[in-house]
Image (cartoon, rainbow over all chains, first blue to last red; front, side, top):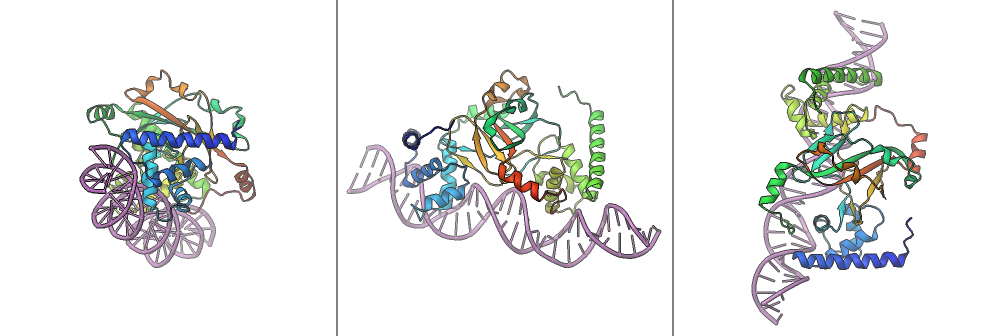
Length: 165
Length: 165
DNA sequence: TGCTACCTGAGAATTATTATCATTCATAAA
DNA sequence: TTTATGAATGATAATAATTCTCAGGTAGCA
């Protein structure tokens, strides 16, 4: 596992950059030096940085870059599928009075949440040594879906990739 | 599924309130009208409300309650296990340049994130009709664990339930 | 090279949450 | 029942993360 040499990683990152540029052209997005620097910083970081960490990394090359640009660009990268937001679909904390073990379905359109029981999720983690020195506490499965209402809505006005950046 | 009558639900909620009061006494927490109102509002809401929604519900009975109290109390409920935070362990968005399908381990102590491959998660969702009118997009499994460093730290200064509320 | 729409930087605005602190109150002991 | 005391609350300030606004700049195309 993780037998990735530096050369291999460099090749992968170069491929990802090319893919990014290509996708930008396809979607009518400009390939700016800032965007390139931000995706490079993201690819270079082994952890899962927050916007500010990316900002600090990029600032070494682009001392005048704005934090707002980093936020905007990271969201753009997620929208076009060149990055993922690790943390949840919600910008504020949601609470659940149901203390029985269960999971959640979240509508990626309206962000509504519904409980769902999915037996066997915990069992997938049994005897997995990838956890290494981590001691397992529990897990939460977030199912991403589109509710009926949002399906209809999307079918009408098809959302454009370009969005409001 | 969901053949829960109103009477049944009322019984359950009453039991949960009693459980809450008992747990407060055990942990040295005061059973205040505000706390009772907040847990009642949480139990009564079918969705997964944010703090402000709970605030608006509780305000009907307690017009003078403070939003800060609602935030504090919801966190307290989570701490003592009478509620769950649906959304993630992080207060700010984390981004991941790895676009290959994978999941995440999060340390509940230091909030560090690590990628993990867990085959078969998606398969658990195949042919599940609980999704109903939701159209499946994907899913994200967040494994909660304690990293080696945080395990050592916790063994030293054992965390107390009462916290700093 | 010039046009144009998109992108960026700067900073204000917004939103969510937490901290501070004086006052009030729940609890338990007298 | 009264009283003492530490904890909880309300009001508000502070902080933190993110988004908005808009003037000026630049990528990409003709």
